[in-house]
Image: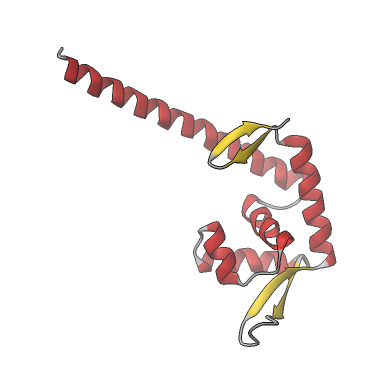
Length: 135
């Protein structure tokens, strides 16, 4: 086997290792979602929307952009969060043609519960694009 073939084989093995790590990450995310459903009563996508809105009211388009999801998917998430009483729609104070989404008092309580869950259960945090252990 030539050194070129050996390095290509090494690269393929590394790519396979990356895929295997991704599989482990996906399994962890599935486990996280199951725990969120059980302990907080929401799924992961609903948690993502609450996290966005905990910072500032946003339009649906801004949330979709931030979460990188399609409007139809976000629409279903918004419908569920609205039916649970966690969010409401309001006219944008800067542009009355636009509506923004914001947390209700119940939504704020749910976001705080989510933050408490995160502080208790997440040993890692994201810094830049890297996962690092919380200190």
